[in-house]
Image (cartoon, rainbow, N blue to C red; front, side, top):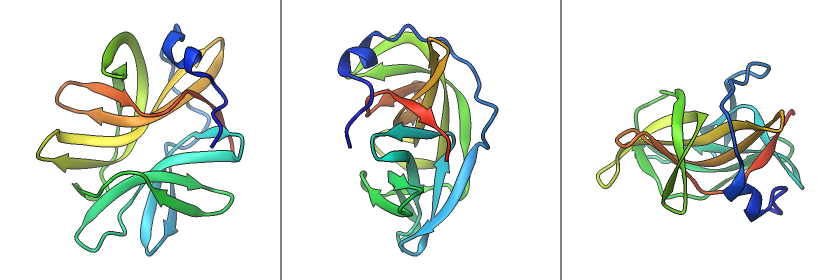
Length: 162
């Protein structure tokens, strides 16, 4: 995937938080025998809309997070599997962190399943949304309920409708 926003943009965005209200909060799909749950709105990429979603296809009741394309209806896991708390979802505001440095910026995050890990405690994978220059942007990562920080794993992408 080729990011639309450069590394300089991800580090330098002076962002303020706004709620996104035009799209539904989640979109549900099925892939590899399990339910794929994607926070909305989608993120735009050079390949079209993409979601950072969770899939509960693991037979042990665990879920992983990965990229899902609504065009191809394909899901590819990008994390190991963790125990999850069923069909729970989470929406809230969080500080953001890139490469371990916490910023004062806050954004609205949406996670599709709350998960548990002995190392982190309670966390969820999802997308954090922020506005910059009047346009909505998003980045995927992990929200940690213990320190209330959203750890960003990706570049910033402008949101996209599907």
